[in-house]
Image 1: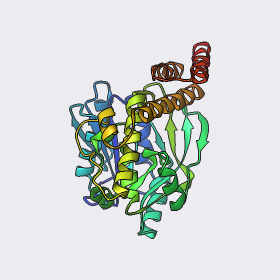
Image 2: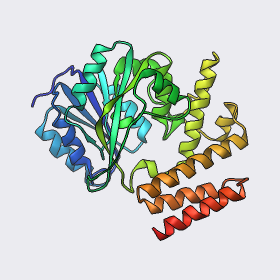
Image 3: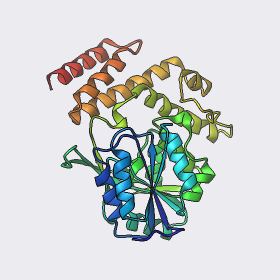
Length: 319
C-alpha cells in the first residue's frame, strides 16, 4: 500500500531490543481500518533481531518508515520521531502492545470533531506474554475528570494516545528531566492550554512482561513524577518551572522545586510500594522483590510499614 507525503496521522513507535513482540505490534497498526497514516519506528540502538524485523515489514508496506540510530534513550527517540513526523496528528504506540483495528479511526474522528481537545487516550486491556486478557483498566474519561486526576497522578496510558502535533510542539515536546514520567510532564503542560480526554472503549492491549520499562528504575520514576507535579505547581504560580535541563530529575532538582527530604522519601516509598503490589498482581515476582528492596532502603520507615513490606517480600518469595 503506498504511503502519502502528508498523512493525517503519524504513528510514533520507539523500540530498543523489542524483537519478542515487535512484529505483532507493527501488524496491529498496519491492519488499521483507517489507512491515511505513516508508521514511524525509531530504532534506539537495538542489538537483537529488531532491525531485521523492521526491514522486512517496511519492505511490505510503504506507509512504514524506520529511523535507526545509536541508543540515546526514550526521550531522545520520541523527540527525534516528532521532528521527522509528517502527520498533523501523532498516535503513540509501543513495540510490545497491540492496537484495536479501529483505534486510529475512532481517535481521529474525536479530534476532528473537537477543536478544543489536544489529546485522546482510551481505556486499555492488560494482556500477558501469551496475549491472554488479564484485566481491563478504565481511566477517567471527560476533560474535567482527567484534569482533576492529573493533579495527583497520570491517568492516561502513553501508548494509547493520539495528539495534535502542533499542540505537542507548542508545549515543548518531551523533556529529559522527566525520565520515565516524560508523558506525565507533557500531559500536565498540554492540560494548561487544552482539554485531554479518554475514550471508554479499550483501544489498546497493554502487554505486561518482565522486560518492560514499568518494572525498572522505580526511584527514578518516583522522582520524575514528583518533579512533574511540582513543576506544574510552579507554572500555576506564574514562575518558570526550572526543569528544562538535560539531566533526569534528582533530589537536588526536587529540593529546588520546593520538596523536602521527608516528602521525597515518602514519594519514593509510595511509588515503590505501589509498584510492588502491581508487580505481584502481574506475577512479576522478581520485579516485586526489587521494588520492595527499594522501599526497605527508605529512611524513617514505621514498624507497621516495615512489617507490611516484609510480608510482601515473603509473598514474592513464595509465589
